[in-house]
Length: 533
Image (cartoon, rainbow, N blue to C red; front, side):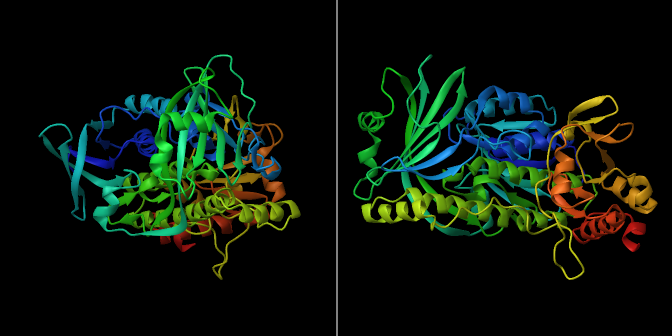
C-alpha cells in the first residue's frame, strides 16, 4: 500500500542494535520510526566489547571516529587459576582481518551517544520516545502498531511495511509472535561492578582476564573511556551457598573489590546482579515482523559478543530490507535472515558457554581437574570463531559449498585513481566481484554485467601495481587473502562475507551465474537474460 503516513520500518526499542539499524536504513534512504519507552537514554554501561567486525560496520555507517573517541584496543585476554598459572590465552591484541585490533573495549553509553548523534542527523528517522508498544497487527501488506504514552494517557497508531523488535531479552514483539526459545544450557548469577579510575591512577591488576579461583570466580576487564577517564569492570560469581541479597550491599561490594582497587583510587559507577543465560529464539521472522539483538538471542559475556552479535543482526537485515523496500527483491529474501544468523550466533553462544564452564567452577576438586587438563594440554580447545554456513552462499551442483564460502572478507586500504582510503569508502558496498589483475568487463558476459547493475552490484580489478581504473591493494590485505586461499577472484556480499571464490579468473563467469541463480532463488529480481544463461 502507498501512503505518506506509511513508514518503511517501525523499530521497537532504542538500544544499540536499534540505533545502528535505524542509522543503516536511514542512510539507505528509508523512512524509519523508532518506539522507546524511556525518554532519556540508559546511562549505565552494559556491554564493554566490540570486535573488529563490529568496528568495521560502525565505520561503514559513519561512526568510526566516534568509536575511536570512546574505546581502546584490547590487550591479551588471559585466564588464570587460583595460583595465577595461565590456563588459556586469547590474543585480542593481534591485528585482525578487518584491519584493526581483534577487539576494542568500549564505554557503551558514550558509544550510544555517538550513534544517536548520527541518527538525529537523519531527517527520515522519527523518534517516538516515551511511548510503549501495546500491540501490533500484521495485515499482510503492512503492519499496524498500537502505542500508548508511558507516562500519560495518549495513544497513537503507526503503520509500516515492516516491524523489527529490538526490544531486549524480554521482547514483547517476540512474545506477541509466540516465538519460543531454546536454552543452550548455561545459567549463573554474577555481580557486575563498573568503576571509573581517578586521574593518574594505575592499578596493579591483570589488563584483561578471568581469575578462575573456586573461592570466587572473578572477571577483570577494561571498560572503555568516559569523559577522558579510564573505566574498569569487575564481575564476581554468586557462590552456591550465597543469596543474591548477600552480594547486593555496597559495603560487601567494596569488600570484594578490596584486593584490586580502593575507594581513593576509583569511583563506583554502578553495581548490579545479572543472571547470565544462553537462549536463542526458534525463528527470527514471522511475516512482516522480525526480531534482532537480545530479542533473538542472549549469551554469557565471556566472549564479549552480546552487542557484537546484535550489530551483525542489524547489518545482515539492513541490506536485505533495503533490497526488498527498493523493489529489487521479494520479501522471501528475508527468510535468509534466520537461516544465516541463527547458526552463526548459536556457535558464538556455545563458545561463550564453553568459556563460562571453565570459570564458573566453585568446587575445589573440579577446579583442580580443570587446571590439570589445561596444563597437560588435554582440555577441549576453544572452537574457531564461526563463519556463515547457510543461506545465500555459492554452491556446487551437488549442493556442497565452494572454497572461501562464508568467510569474512579482508578490509584494508585501497586506492582508485586519486582516492585512497578504506575499501568501503573507495569501492563502495553491495555485491562486489573482485578479480586479480584481469578486466572483469572482458571476463563477464554483458548480461551478467547488466544483472550486477540491476542488483546494485559492481565488478573491480584488484592490482598491486599501477592504478588507472583498477583498485590498488595498498596494504596488500586483499592479495594476501586471495593468495592464502589459492584464489584468483571472489564475490563479496554487502555484509562483507564471501559468497564464493574461484581458483582461476576464467571461472569467474560461472561463479557470477551461481550468484545470480542463488539470488533469484532467494527472491531477488535479476535480469531474465542472466537467469537463462
